[in-house]
Image 1 (cartoon, rainbow over the protein chains, first blue to last red):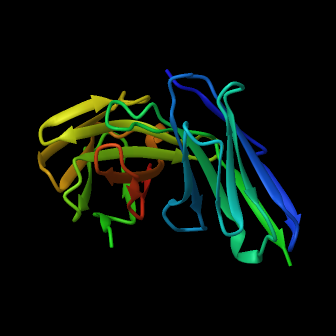
Image 2 (image 1 turned 90 degrees about the vertical axis):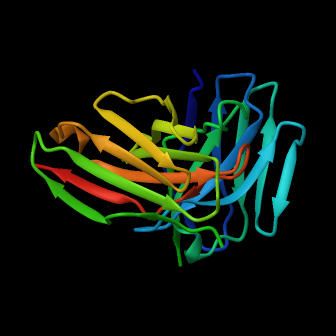
Length: 113
Length: 111
């Protein structure tokens, strides 16, 4: 089955700096890659996603890039703010079988004011 | 606005007890999922259901069963709770091929 690895497990940045989180996946049939943000004590919420027919997608300060050849995708957050502090999860899916997602282990991002 | 609710936020049970966790969604989603979340391991899929009375095993189904008698409701059952099932349990739902929306989670402690 699919295996998703996520790095780093923790990331600390100064407010205003950029943050990058990287994920690799194993199943070349995967074609849907969402990113979820989970604030402390809250449920995971989708922040951005990308499908395999697109190489990059941007939404204000966040962007996701996908390299299908290398089987990796990354989340980029620019001009980080304290409210960006959370755990971020990447995931991959083939889009089949009810869009089952395989999640990475998570990255705890801390933005220091 | 999508609403996914779970029956309890916190639950304390004893080893060997039968435990029921319930999830309800109000968006007429076909798919429903149960995950457990443990530090460093991300979210791991226990079971999912793509229709009423239909279920598929996820990555870690051992020790768990599920029930989906109505479209809006998906139950996770721990037949005989064990201490290694202490975890955060998250339910999610989605349309076919759509975004998964999560419930608030149930933190289960098995003593």
